[in-house]
Length: 204
Image 1 (cartoon, rainbow, N blue to C red):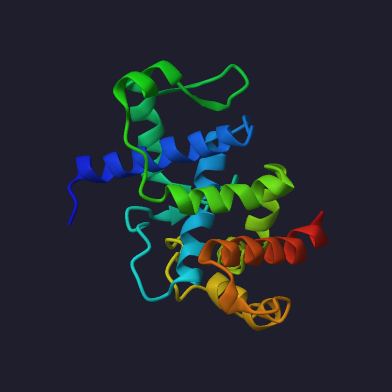
Image 2: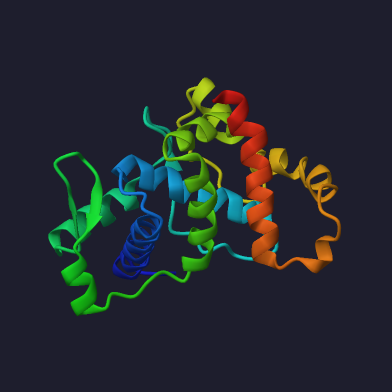
């Protein structure tokens, strides 16, 4: 089991990597609540894509809040990174990396870099404002919110969101001529595009 400092280091790396990836696509308005939502979505969707391996999101425990999924360790991470001058909060309330610190210290990026890039790329197509719309349609989150559940949100491969998304797999693959001829990343990107077009656009 990881000790607290190792766990915080891993989460710090995830937060830094997420902000860096969003900056790469010019998505500059990243608030603290957005980080919670992005990591929640990344963890649930990771469980959906590969049910037979550890997803790397074991450090996260989410609960309900008015602004979406909330994880105490993400809050601690953002505060720790601020204290270390790795990131700061702009006057507009957005999280921004201190580029000078990042370059000089060569802070390690998360081993989830490629996965975050896929998630951010697809979400970036629709804009940050669409993320919360998707969270509201997340069956696991929606049920817990409606019942005012005080329990920890389930981000394993057994949660209702994974069950819900699995219903689309067959119909999605029917839209591709030959699934075996595309890479894993192409599959993920096409799948997320399909899912978000079906779920988010109906709510737009």
